Image (cartoon, rainbow, N blue to C red; front, side, top):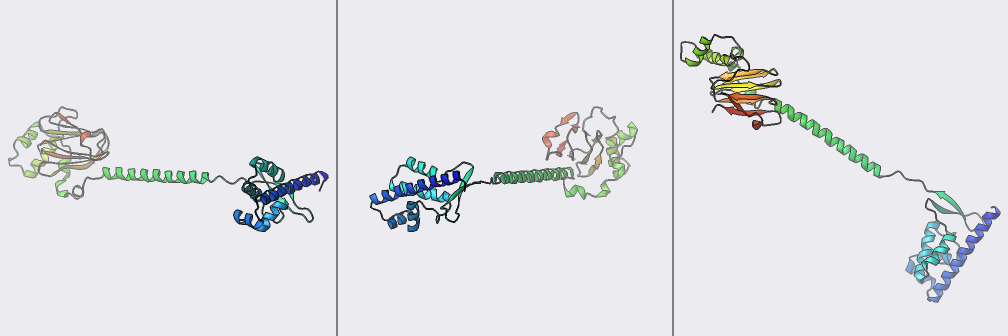
Length: 297
């Protein structure tokens, strides 16, 4: 050891011995035996003797010795400030360092500074867990909304999907140019010599005859979709008038089959008019994109 280290060591030893003597005298003044003090402080008699002698070689780490000394001083009624002055001389403390004892042969003890390693902040793990949970919830909600939208765009019921194809002849829904006399005959003389199925076909075709955008006449249903959509309409006899995916911006007219049961798969922006009166599509929404209602009752 250097001369400075020896001087410092000597000073620390003297402070420890001086404090130990003070503790011993205070104990004797209160007529406590070493055994009584050890029992009250939950320490061994040998540890009490070490504290009073100022020799801490057989004691635990100095951070614990400091606590033992302070507790012993309070037990004997020694002033805290006085104890702190002794402890700061014997066992100095620093905010960023703790002091350990290095015992070497004939020397009672030496001090060396040991830096405290900073631990990884545990709160970061908590933040990562919350982020993972939030991301999982977002993905789950997005997937659920997508599946819900797909379901709404499908046919409203298995009954419509499995409807008999015999009522869906292509001639019933195609637009065929007809003379005004043929249209009037199909509408005003349903009991004529023409076949009943042909009459129904002519009625459906007649609905498409007026020019697009013309004013609907009495008893006429006009459906115009803004986007490509599935359009399903049944007439008063529960017969399918149309059941197909229609193009965006298309207009569809029907007459002679009221009341109509209308189902529009993607109804956003669609307009419906019956006999010159607007039908609120928005007020008849059964989902985010689907509308279903009956007109002409």
